Length: 93
Image 1: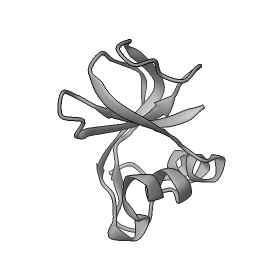
Image 2: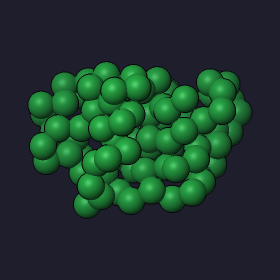
Image 3: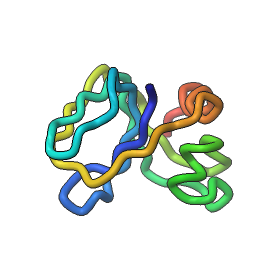
Image 4: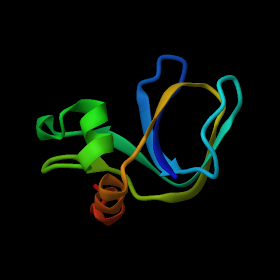
């Protein structure tokens, strides 16, 4: 399952990655093929729009790294299959 994780003590680090199971509050999250969202375009419709439809023009997403383990996070959102495909194909900034 692909998710967007709002990481860090303030939840402002937005990371997209694949997980084997839904995150459990209070436990670390192990993300594979992790990419950080630096900026999403207004046309995305915010965080939930990004999860629902994927990136839009001017969205900035980093290259992927094999694995990121986040120990401090605030919330997570499941990404739709359609948005996941667009994210995977999105050129890194």
